[in-house]
Amino acid sequence: MWNTILRWRSREGSVEHSTGDMILKTVNMQEVSVAAEIVLEGLADKRLSIEVYEMSGHQPEDENSFERPMLVSPKQKALQTEGSSFAYEFPKQSVAVMRLR
Image (cartoon, rainbow, N blue to C red; front, side, top):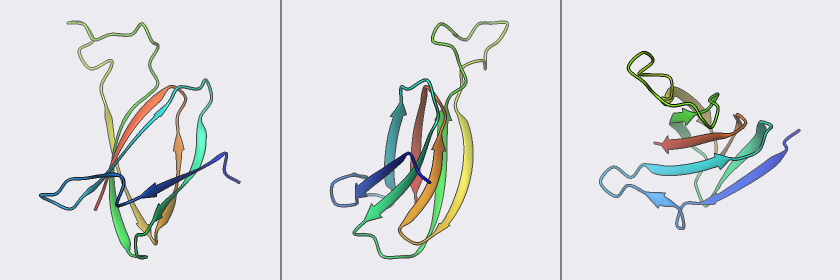
């Protein structure tokens, strides 16, 4: 069961014209993670490769320092999906940028 359904219309969202990649940016400001189904409306069912760049797991006052230069840095992961929708869990207080190919 999903907490949220995100609907994204390819004609209305961000598209990098040089590559054709779709860019989806999300922010979860809540104190709880959000399980979502992302529905890509208007996109034919096909295999998608998704690169996710995510900032999460930090306290608002955290910052990088010489002692901990990578404390606050994006984590990267790769996903594959079939069809025009996929599931993703957005961690609490996170920012995620997804590049869909």
